[in-house]
Image (tube, one colour):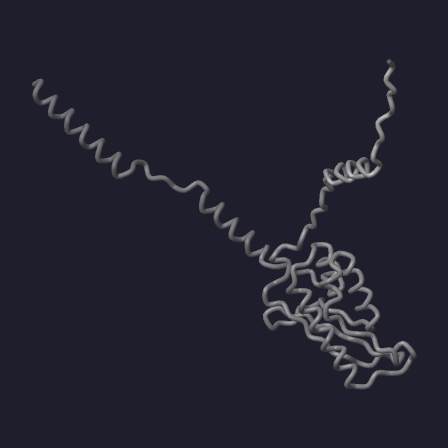
Length: 205
């Protein structure tokens, strides 16, 4: 008798599970982020912020950069609040969480063209100062730190110059030094050999 051969039914869900397992084995290489070195900013770097009225009626915020209590000539900037917000958005492209944390809010009345009160201007200046200080102290991606450095027009770095000077001193110390014709040990050996030679010469006579 001929046996009826029926095709083995396939379970559609089984194939889906296999596809899922195959998908799980795929490895996606994470993109490495290069962070700013620890000496990117000088340790005693600080910023102060003041608000002033602009010529067109819009308030301006001036940033003064200091290192160890001394104002850095050529550094610092003066901008309207919108420029600080744009800079923050650039930093956020590299670290959204840190960039948005603590940044001063935008007043609706300011958007409508209503001037802020003196108290609100002071609060905004203090908020910007605190935010920049936090960004300088934070571990930021190198690209984000460069955005902030360029905005502050700050050319200096940490202790790189001092480290270079130390390296140069070490290299000089390891250079050619004047060497004495003979060390104390060599002198002692030479004297002993000469004494032995004299003794042999006297015995031969």
